[in-house]
Image (cartoon, rainbow, N blue to C red; front, side, top):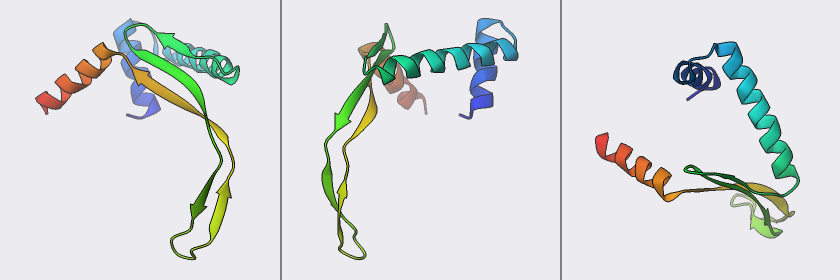
Amino acid sequence: MKNKEYIAKVAEEAGISVEQAQKNLSALTEVMSGILQESNSIVISGFGTFEVKKKNERISVNPVTKKRLLIPPKLVVNFKPTTSTKEKLKEGERHE
């Protein structure tokens, strides 16, 4: 789903204008980004947990040249869904 489609769906579901939904989404992403930059986790009850994890440096091999490269450590965002979110996803699989 593209950003415009997502915003339109949120606006419809919440009964607000598309402009308000866009402002709310922008505010939400700014707040979430700030919290994650502080290396904290975000728990959304009934949905899941966003958490910053550190990936250690590693050695990778280019399959074409066989050259070994050192991949530096980096921070990545990890999402762990709640049980109810997992169940909703499974229900969606059954309906397709």
